[in-house]
Picture (cartoon, rainbow, N blue to C red):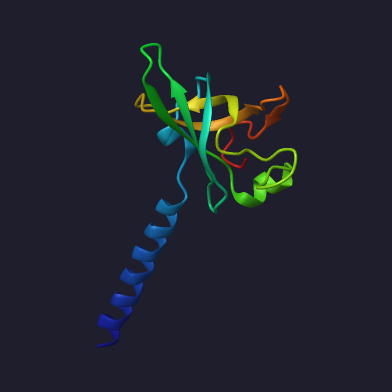
Length: 134
């Protein structure tokens, strides 16, 4: 009986460790860390949430259609430490026309890890160096 309980405890611990390891993922697993790209468009939505915020940008294609790009941001805390938030001079709002530099997704989908934003007034705000700790 003791062996069975001990076996269950060990199995439960192993399963829990596996879940927490999967929760923190590597940027290199999703993004092509050897590339950088840039697009311009209109801010659709920005979310300041943990563990990662997101920015949705409507980018006009050459044929006149639009593609919604989704960019992963750092945590709300990390963004606040860089002076970026919901209010103030570094706030982004729906409808703002901006340019972004990013690390593109490996699979070519309209997804990226945001590195910098060129604001409507021309200021460049560095979001991340593209490191896992940014």
